[in-house]
Length: 226
Image (cartoon, rainbow, N blue to C red; front, top):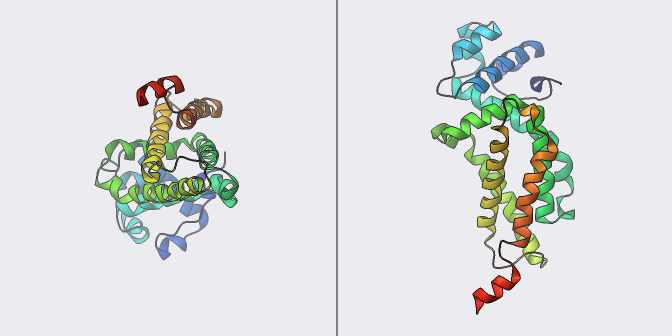
C-alpha cells in the first residue's frame, strides 16, 4: 500500500516545505504513528522527535506546537479522503440524496479500510469529544451537514422526498448514524483491514432502507391516524 504521506501535499511552515520530500515524509509518518497510538492529550512531541530523528529545535521550526502538527495530520487525512470521494462529487446532481449518500459512504469505507491509522486517530478524537474535537473536527461536520442539507432540499423540491421533513434534522441523523456505524464496525476487530466493504455496506443499506420505508407498516399507520 502506498504511504499516505507520499500521496498528499500539505502546508505547515515554509521551513518544513523546504525540507526534502523524504524528510517531510519521515516526520509526517512519525506524527501519524504517535497520534494513532495515543489520544491528543497523551501524545508526546518527544516521541515524534525521537522516531523522526530530528532535534526539538527543528520540530518547532516546522510546527508551532502539538496542536499544529495534529491539525496538519487531519489536513492530510482530508486530502487523501477527498481523492476517494472526488469521482462521486463530480456529478452529484445526477443522484438522489440517498443514492449520493450511499456512494459517498462506500468511498469513505474504502478510505477507512485502506488507511487504518487514520481511522485510529479519528476514533481517539471522537471518543474524547473535548475542546480538541471542537477545534479539529466540528468544522468538518458542519461542512458535511451543509452539503447534505442542500441535496435534501433539492430532493424535496423535485418531489422525491417528504417536504415536511426538516433537512437539518435528517442531515444530522445521517451523519450521526453513519459515523456511529463505521466506528462500531471498526471496534469489532483489532485491525480495520479485517473488515470488508460488503459488511459495511450491508449495515448502511439497512439504514437507507429504514430512511426510505420508515418503521411502521401502512396498515398500522392507518390505525394510528384514526
